[in-house]
Image 1: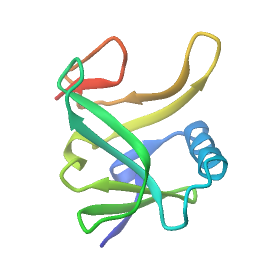
Image 2: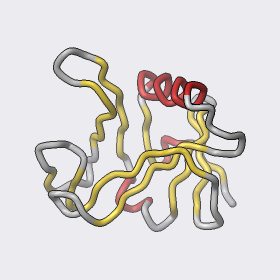
Image 3: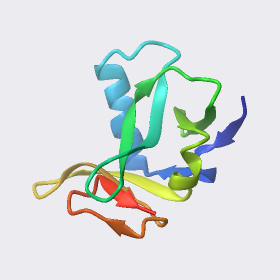
Length: 115
């Protein structure tokens, strides 16, 4: 198990960190859980993003950003390298936004990509 800074794989903006921390408290996420950032096959463009609170496994990189524990499965890291996760809370857009520099195409919903 190695621990890295989150920015070595993913970057999470201060606004998104605040929202994730709020959700940790509001949803009474059990101790030992961390934010899981990953990908899965599917979606309009080939891969879709995974966000959720989960227990760590032996296959995870353990990251931390501004006190927020983050998990990334090592097999997913190559698809997420350099990704920025932001949070928008406006009238025209609300929710987490993924800015992936490795994506060769994305879909209109912003939740899936191809690399």
